[in-house]
Length: 221
Image (cartoon, rainbow, N blue to C red; front, side):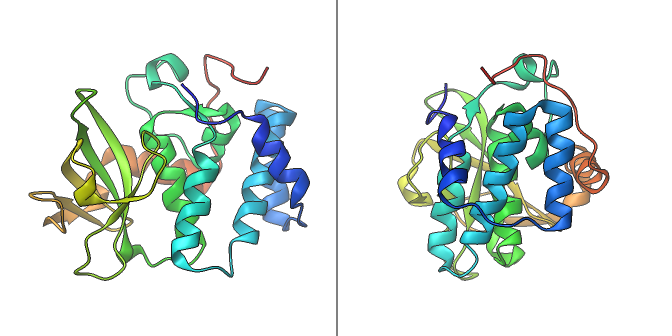
C-alpha cells in the first residue's frame, strides 16, 4: 500500500530547491552512498520541505509534514527489515522509501520538533486500529495542555480530532521525555519516562550516530 507515487518527492524537490547546510549535505551524501541516488533526493526533498515550512502556522506545519511523509509506501517490518519490530530513523525511512506506522509517526514527530513545535504539544500514540484488528501508531498534537488532540496518521491522511477517530483505541503515548498510559481519548496517566522504552532508546542512539540498516526489499524502481 502507498499513498502517492514516490516520484512526487522528486517533483517537490525540483519545485522548491534550497541550499543545504553542511550537516544536511552530509546526510544526503551518506544516504545516497548507502541506499542509492534516489534515496538521497528524497532526503533533499525532506530538507527543502522543512526549510520552506519554517515560517508558517503550527496547523500548516502539521499539514505539510503529514502530507510529505504520507507519500511513502507502507510495509510491515518483517517484510521490509526482516525483523518483527524495528523503529527506523527518518533517514532510514526515506532511504528505504517505505516503513510501517511507527516509521511514519517517528519521521513526522522529529520533523515537527525541528520546526519548533514544543515537545509538550506532541505525543507518539500507540493505538488499536479496530477495523484492522492490529496495533498502530499515530502522532497527537495538543494545541494547549487541556485541548483535545488532533491526529496525524498514515491510514487516514486527513488530520482529525481524536474524538472523530472512533476506529482507534488509545493504549499508551510518549514524547521525548515522558510516557503515559491512555485511559481515555485525552491526556492519560503519567507512567514514567520515555527511556523505559527500549525501541525508543535504540532509535535515538541510531539518530545520534547516523547508523543505518538496509532493507531486505527494494522500493526504488
